[in-house]
Image 1 (cartoon, rainbow, N blue to C red):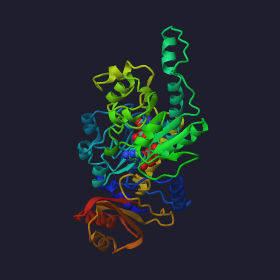
Image 2: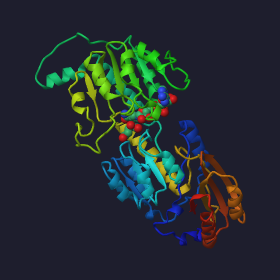
Image 3: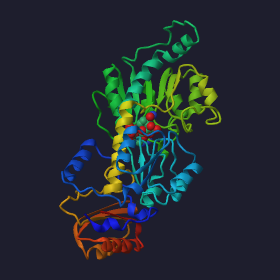
Image 4: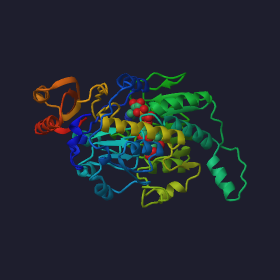
Length: 463
Ligand SMILES: NC(=O)c1ccc[n+]([C@@H]2O[C@H](COP(=O)([O-])OP(=O)(O)OC[C@H]3O[C@@H](n4cnc5c(N)ncnc54)[C@H](O)[C@@H]3O)[C@@H](O)[C@H]2O)c1
Ligand SMILES: O=C(O)CC[C@@H](O)C(=O)O
């Protein structure tokens, strides 16, 4: 084996654990086919120096499947059930190399600035709006998520909620719990024959489309992209077209500036009287005080909310006006289902997410692969094999400015570069090269020279 292991960097030497950010997510087929192609049976396990020095912080009750994968690597894994406040996070994140979060933990620029050793962030969920992706990329910190492992769970929840709202099930159940028999059919409907309007026809919206059609519903959808319809679904041109036609309106868009408050007073005015609203996307997408008004006036006959502008840090916390000023008004409404951000909270989804994201973190930490990252270019190299003992993998994350490759190749070009790949995304570029016949002194020298280049964001050497 390579003698390079003898030059273990200090535990706080984040550069050796260099990170990569990468690009947008892939379809499952492209993902797995690339991986299958690049992992031969005799693949040499690359390690970012001493794995037992890698500190992992997992917040928000990340699934056991993910925890196990990371622990099995020998990493030091600390696991917390809830999220942390910004100040607590700043204290904790300082010596952490890998952090795993879900939707609640805010990794702002202020927090990431303190994360001097951090190489990679795993969002054990779909949404990545809780992370300052650009700031992370600028620091060479890769971010991974799980693009579709909980999509089906959300789609099924929405189907259930449509039936519940149409039949006022929440109210009937609450009344029975309070000891009151109230057998009514007024204002109760089948969903068969009704129109569902899906805002955002991505992974969740498309799943929902198929399920809703099977329930006998007509499906229309609005999306900023021109997307192929599934079954007999029909894309409408504008949000207003959807609002005017749908009986059930359901939001499945990401939290981005364009979707903030996209359902507010004006949109409620354009809906049909007696329509229903469901939001299981992000809490900022619907203006909740405007929804409260629309429900009080009878314009909206029922609603289901799973997400809120401010959400508690963990289970057992209060959902009250200290958190969101409208909480008490919201809780007083009839035919309103409010759930604690559980759209993706099923055993199936959480297990799958745990595996998917933890594996991406390990691949990144140990091999430098950015495949599936959401904020950096995607770079993956065929694995080194056990037949290639004296190889090292050099990763150089750098500013995407002219002349860098020439400088880098002046440094690594003195050696035998077996393979090399580079790609850029915006202002950041990611270079990965496998170099043969290198000893500890050479690795140290390469590392030091790359680190001294003005274009450097982060350097890592894996061996
Ligand atoms: N409640 C939960 O537990 C839960 C679980 C999973 C995902 N989510 C949320 O749901 C969101 C959607 O998930 P997904 O997997 O379907 O995402 P996706 O990226 O597959 O699909 C989102 C769709 O929204 C469209 N879109 C973007 N901006 C739009 C706009 N302004 N108007 C109309 N359409 C727009 C996109 O083009 C895309 O087709 C996630 O971003 C996440 O925030 C919530
Ligand atoms: O599990 C979570 O915290 C988030 C679930 C969901 O909103 C997601 O973005 O996947």
